[in-house]
Structure formats: C-alpha cells, structure tokens
Length: 82
Image 1 (cartoon, rainbow, N blue to C red):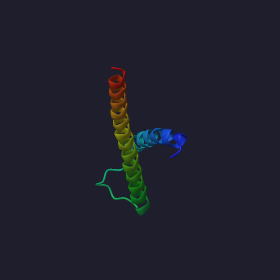
Image 2 (image 1 turned 90 degrees about the vertical axis):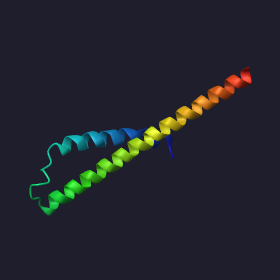
Image 3 (image 1 turned 135 degrees about the vertical axis):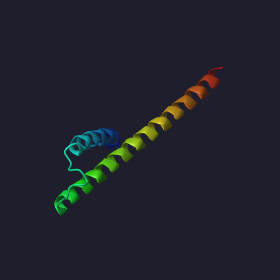
C-alpha cells in the first residue's frame, strides 16, 4: 500500500466521523415516520460511520503494533551494545 494513501486514510476517517456526528444531530427521531429516501440516507450515514470507526480502529491497532516493534528494536539494540 502506498505511503501517501496509508497516511491519508486516517485523516479521511476522522473527517467522515466528524461530519457524521454533525449530521446525526439533524436526523429525525426513529419514532417519526420517514420516507424511503430518508431511510436510505440514514442507512448510508450509518454505513459511513461504521466504516470510519473501523478505519480508526485499524489505525489504533497499527499504532500499537508499531510501538511494540519499536520497543523490541530498542531492547535488541541495547542488548547488542552491552
């Protein structure tokens, strides 16, 4: 995966989640009747939010993996120096 695309995906996910949060404040309550278009819009928004959260979780997991790898590297480097 190209580095530029990898770097931009988390930013995109954060932006989508922020827009979704803002848009959710304008949604009709579920108790109000909705047109098919409104239902479709709600479903699409929910899908975008779920995808954004998934991307953010992948980013968090990747961060933890890289932190662990860096710590292993530092430990091995220190062991080699000793």
